[in-house]
Image (cartoon, rainbow, N blue to C red; front, top):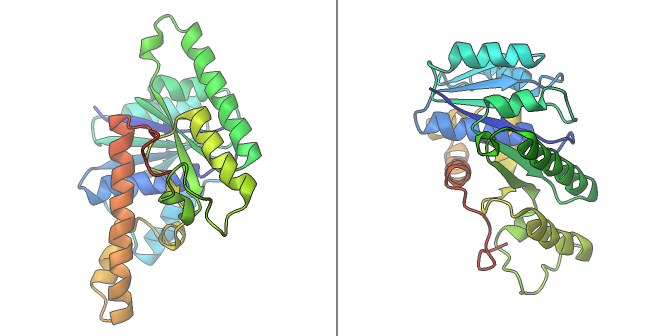
Amino acid sequence: MAIVLGIMSSKGGAGKSTITKLISSAFAFTGNTCLIIDLDPNKDIVNWWSTATQTGYVDDKIIVRPATNGDDLFDLVGRYESDVKFILIDTKGEASSWAVDLASVSDVLVVPCMNAKGDRERTQETIDWYEDLKSRAENGERIPPLHVVLSRVKPNLLSHVRGTPKPKDLAAREFERHYEIIDQFNPLVTMVPEKSQYREMDELGPLGAILKRYRESDDNNEKLKAYHFEVALAHAITLVNNIFDNRKMEASDAA
């Protein structure tokens, strides 16, 4: 039976699709089959996969299917749960009637949060919804665990250690809010940074397919790029491991 991860947030632009692409890249690169169900009406994942198919940046271990409602979601999970190792569900950025359906089919819920006032408020709304769902369930332990992931994090915050001086090129309020969000949501220790490799992933296809192309290139400059994609994939694999290990931030952790 497949392990199902639901990526959700009540706000658009929080980084759900990027995290979905990262996690699916990690699954495929480590030899695991993965279905991505795209519940977003904008079809970001479907369009991403269509582009990857046209340009050749695909991985046959990834399958992408669109869904428009909860019934489609249940049908797709039922159809593929014995054929793939993992199922990822990317959702639209607003509160929806199918949120309960998402929780009912998922083994883990992942909520991305950017360092912004609106994102922080929407993340709290998502957590409030989750806690209410647990309180109303006949058996709250059957509700999947929920993990917050800090997304689109500035590079100078990735290695910053709490209690040390603020990075010089970071606004004071942004710096303060970063640690306020950590204290408020107790996110996973692995953050998703702003990286050019992730932008290239958004434009082309899975990280592993891009890495393969650069490794096999006759262009020395492209061969040098391969290292950066190896690092990006290692980061994505670490994120997946921390999701399953439930490794949250501690005061001793960098950022």
